[in-house]
Amino acid sequence: MKNFPFSPPPARELRLAAAWIAADNPTAARGLLDDALHAACMIVAKPGLARVEPKLAPPRFRFWSLRAYPYLLVLDTGRDPPVIARFLHQARDLPSALAELLH
Image (cartoon, rainbow, N blue to C red; front, top):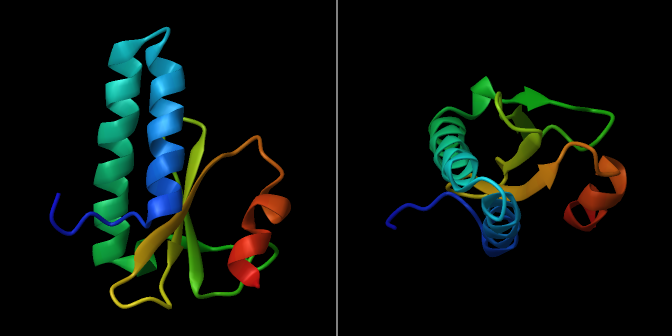
């Protein structure tokens, strides 16, 4: 897909999450993929829509929670163009999951 806004690690994380969900509910898995891609394209185009979380990361990283799914998109606005740097389940230990981005 041209202009796919995910870097390789979060694209893999998204595929794994969708595959796990698809085992029980293929429709929900498709919804996750659609919602994540829609949200990613939107915040890459308008990074100011995503929130800054100073307790988790420097302001160059912005965060977007998916409404219908417990997942978080992490946008790296320090890249040109901005890119989704992580796709994480919100129940994870977020500081640990984000540590590699900050070093």
